Image 1 (cartoon, rainbow, N blue to C red):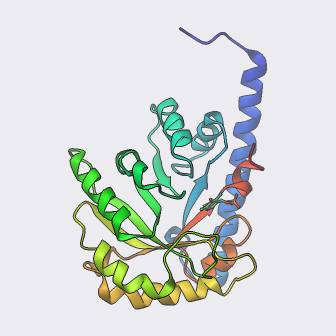
Image 2: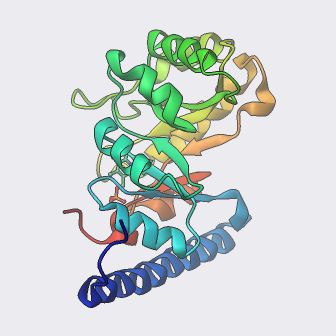
Length: 243
Ligand SMILES: *Cc1c(COP(=O)(O)O)cnc(C)c1O
């Protein structure tokens, strides 16, 4: 059935599209400026739009402004949005905590997973991705609890080499790099993460694939880019406050 013509709804959607297009242009400009300031190439930094707790209409609006990559934290919420937006060609990143009994849906419905911190989870993702016929390898980032906070997920910095060695040898995943969420105010954490990233390259089964640093959010992406981030995960600065 065709939705009824609803002028108010159409107006809201147009306003949303304009707002989000402006926000995205602003964030993109800032990324370019930061890159210029620190001597990096802007195309080496990917903007991941974090759409958790935002409506499908908001994702549609940002996509209309040119955004392709979206990050989601909660599996059920993400799956229902994906179903509603199936007509769009989007790249989906799972950036939330991964429960062991949810790996099959994550393996089959996402292009990237940023929160892997155990070999067991990576093994399950690899095996379940492999069962989906014709899917390309699932891109993974190893999450590091860089400030060793009790409340946060991620492996310990000292565990990185052995985890990289093991996970990079699994068949249906491509281990691309590291992901961190530093403790607030710990801006040197990005520099420490970059050093860990470089030191783990030699233990990766295919060092050519080791090319990603997922770090930086709305409040700290400048410092993250200065330290080598290749994916910045931005929610609030694009969509405004979450509902
Ligand atoms: C919510 C979230 C973000 C985005 O945070 P903002 O401050 O809204 O930009 C980035 N990364 C992760 C892992 C998140 O959970």
